[in-house]
Image 1 (spheres, rainbow, N blue to C red):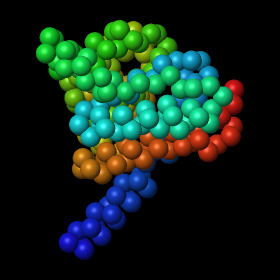
Image 2 (cartoon, helix red, strand yellow; image 1 turned 90 degrees about the vertical axis):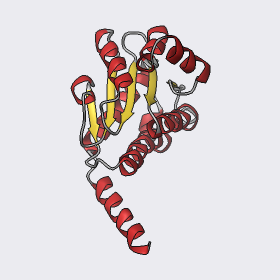
Image 3 (cartoon, helix red, strand yellow; image 1 turned 135 degrees about the vertical axis):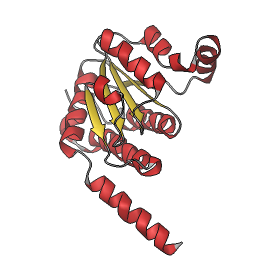
Image 4 (cartoon, rainbow, N blue to C red; image 1 turned 180 degrees about the vertical axis):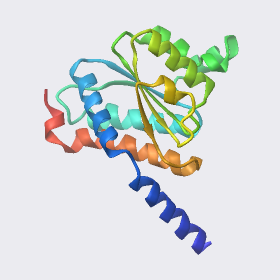
Length: 190
């Protein structure tokens, strides 16, 4: 067990060392633009990525917003269970995010999606709709990239296919974004 844990941590460190730092910095600036322009930020994913979406929106909407000159307009599309189950039941699970975006999103808003495979049909359908309706999109993916690689305006790839390591790295990226606004004074003001 000791060797397994030691190896897991070592590979996780290697994965984190390979994060696309320049692109992560670019995404922080896109979040700053969304804040400055009062744009809505929609965050969503499936499974562990759904949990990461909820966690990230909590950090951005509470922690980051407590430090900035105005509050982030952000929502996790994973968090309204009644709406999600109605959409899945009455339409299809593939419509669970796009149907929410149809109600809430406006041109100029931002979609921030997470998927290890990059091939979740409900994320693909949502980003296709975003592309057609002027919603800027950012995808966090694993090294298989999938179809999201072709649809998103910016793709942050974690160079691994292990679900746990990729989801951990996605959360690290989310923490970098949120804590940049908590800890860098230049990002806190207009």
